[in-house]
Amino acid sequence: MTASTPFNKILIANRGEIALRVIRSARAHGYRTVAVYSTADADARHVQQADQAVCIGEALPAQSYLRIPAIIDAARKTGADAIHPGYGFLAENEDFAQACRDAGMVFIGPSPEAILAMGNKAGAKRLMIDAGVPCIPGYQGADQSETCLADEAARIGYPVMIKAVAGGGGRGMRLVNSAKEFVELLRSAQSEAKNAFGDATVILERAVVEPRHIEIQVFADRHGNAVHLGERDCSVQRRHQKVIEEAPSPAVSAELRERMGATAVAAVKAIRYEGAGTLEFLLDRDGNYFFMEMNTRLQVEHPVTEAITGLDLVELQLRIAAGEPLPITQNDVKFRGHAIEVRLCAENADKSFMPQSGTMALWHMPERLRVEHALKSGAEIPPFYDSMIAKIISHGETRDEARRKLLCGLEDAVALGVTTNQFFLNRCLSHPVFIQGGRRPHLLDNIWTIYCNQM
Image (cartoon, rainbow, N blue to C red; front, top):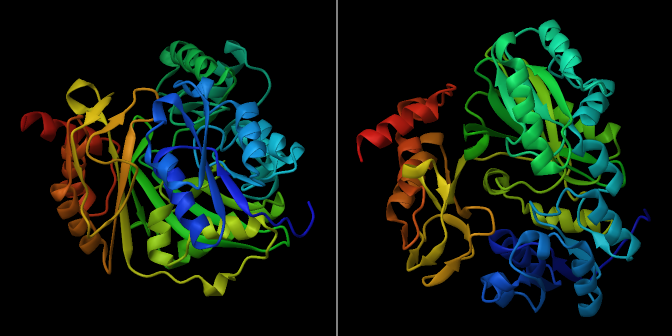
């Protein structure tokens, strides 16, 4: 790619709060914006906020937000010369990045080659091993027969994690505690992976006991510069889905942060990465960390990093995509205070967190906190998309100050008409294990028990 790739108008190939987030930074830096929308989102806020908007299809994602030709055509019709994918949908789709390149448009993200290389867990793990990044012992071979995989699981030693090589979000992932349950769980994981991603291939990894989920935010430009922006702790999860994210991690010392950050920077330099990325690690009780996967996009939880660094991560994406060198060095990155984010979702905790849809009759979010959302009173929440409807972020000088602010903000939030996980999030923030900064595998089970007992 040439050193300079200037652009003037950005099409955001996404919806909801992330589309609004990109519009905000783009507008602040002098770019025109184009929204795309499905028929279900015709009255959505991101459609109203952009300079232009184009309908790209029907409600289902496969008929709209996943239609690469329709999105490229919308960019051509509106004169957009750059495309920001947000996260989800096509954000980590190498075919989409390639389609943007073929159309002469700047893709605000890494190259198709980098997305392809890091999008496959087996291939990514091999690349990281070659780059000297610590990886969990496991198997990522081509032989996917039950006999071979069972033999490899026995070699690795139980407990073992089965992971789909494609996709994410916990789909195609199973924890296997013994050989007698391996084949059944393998078939289940492969079936789920095939249905979700069209690929039943899996890898095996030794299960790390009581791990913390630590991710390192990185940025790299096409001039060979790379920096890390510290870590985020995403250990509080339900069914491998993140519930609470915070920065910095209460389990990461300054020395460990420096080591993990240096590892992440070395990794992105080794693969000549460009743009925003996140390397995800498991951290064990002894302070050992192991590479899990890389997300080649902006993360949902990027606001907590923005809060403690004072940086605009979308602005950095835009500068790098235009061919500018990183405007900061590692020495420029300073951390202040603590930030915590919760994901407010339209889901019913009483019914196994089943996603909800309908009319949000009354919607009022706390003004003292940063809230990323795309709703208003009377807005419709369609049943076709992710259940997350808002991210609520607090920042304080200490972790407990940030936690208290977030708890107060959640208590003040009004979301009536569609059931949400608001009360459950309150319980998470109030749980003794979370208050102490600890993480145990059954933390959410404990909170769920408390929740049920108080209903």
